Image (cartoon, rainbow, N blue to C red):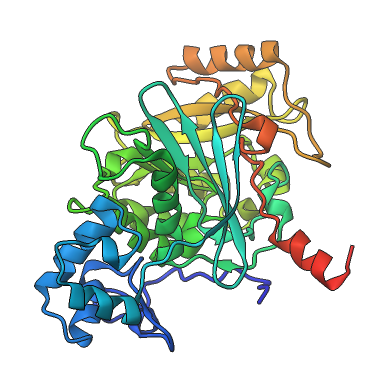
Amino acid sequence: MTSTSPPHSESPNATSCGGLPPKECSQNTDRTSLIGLDRACFESALVKLGERSYRAKQIWHWLYYQGARTFDEMTTLPKSLRTRLSSSCNIDRPTVNRMQQSEDGALKWLVQFADEREVECVHIPEEDRGALCISSQVGCTLTCRFCHTGTQKLVRNLDAGEIVNQVLIARDTIGEWPSPKDGRMISNIVMMGMGEPLYNFDNVARALRIIMDGEGISLSRRRITLSTAGVVPLIERCGRELGVNLAVSLHAVDDELRNQIVPINKKYPIADLLEACRRYPSGRNSRRITFEYVMLKGVNDSDSDARALVRLLDGVPAKVNLIPFNAWPGAPYQCSSNNRMHSFADIINDGGYSAPIRVPRGRDILAACGQLKSDSEQVKRNRTGLS
């Protein structure tokens, strides 16, 4: 099932049933999977099973507000209906093959889906809040040289249910049901895990709409950030249709270097990327675009690089997130020194842009930025006797 090119669409699919491709609304040979269906398709699936449409609202509430994992928990439904739903519909969580906790409190889940493919997602807690970093693909097609995920070939896109289920699993673990209005430990969602979200736009968009739905998980779009390496044609669409915060993996200030470390730059060079950012519908001073910049010793961390970055960002409501390089086995780079990072940050700050240096979290369990990589390919090789 390995693909040599990204399984994505840069234009809307032919759709039905509330914007879902027809195959997403169909009933499989066993049970209809409800997690990941949008509102219209969710209702349609239940109507096709002979249920009244108002039941859809009740079940949606149980799934995404109460966090029900079985139909038996849905006590406001008649028992006969719960029995019928159990035999015809599927709301099962994927398998958690491993959960690790870092010394700093970060949690990482290795999640396995029905086809035995795996992804990782990570929760980074703060004192009174926390961010959940979720994945959009198994593997990645971008091969960014500083990223561990990029060493794993792209296997496939995740469907909307597989994306949403990462959030459900995290909330199960943390005990965040029913959905609290305030004081959430999963207060933010960041699409910064495995994969390029804009190369799986339709499924990512469907999942985020479920996460934002006011009658379920109900997370504000202001609390959601989508990170892209620069799929220029879909940046405007992301802002127009979703309105979430945008983060851009920049990491270099000229095309020659960025072509090497972020190869998608060969297709969408820096000038085109920044123009798309200037047009981003939600990009304004109150919701600045974040430019992610990994600090690589002797590669992109000079004072002249910092000054060039200030010039590049002219006219873009922006902040710069400086990321200490997080090493992984066999990594080709080293992290810039602490003094070098602070000198770099000072130049950015003096240029009028906020430039915090991110504090690495979860390094001891390979959960930090750029370190995620599932075990599925190694497990597969072990089963077949390959090294």
